[in-house]
Length: 74
Image 1 (cartoon, rainbow, N blue to C red):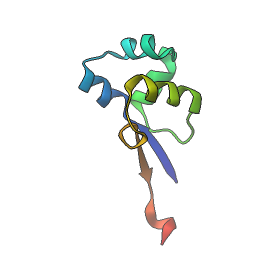
Image 2 (image 1 turned 30 degrees about the vertical axis):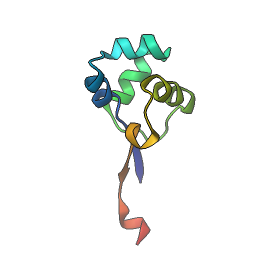
Image 3 (image 1 turned 45 degrees about the horizontal axis):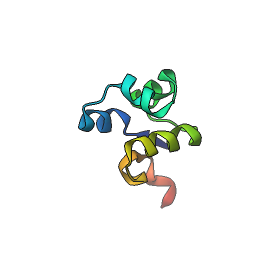
């Protein structure tokens, strides 16, 4: 099963932003941003992810990391 890691914490650190700063700039709720920052997700809210991506001004590859078991592909 694959999950997506949203690199919120890492990108915030690169920009010297707090989670609260990202919430303020993006309009995404603290609860949602905190959840993405703390754990990999099986499902994500594309509206929230698009707003976070736009706020960071980064690529999808910079923001999202696919994690999971490759054994299904064999």
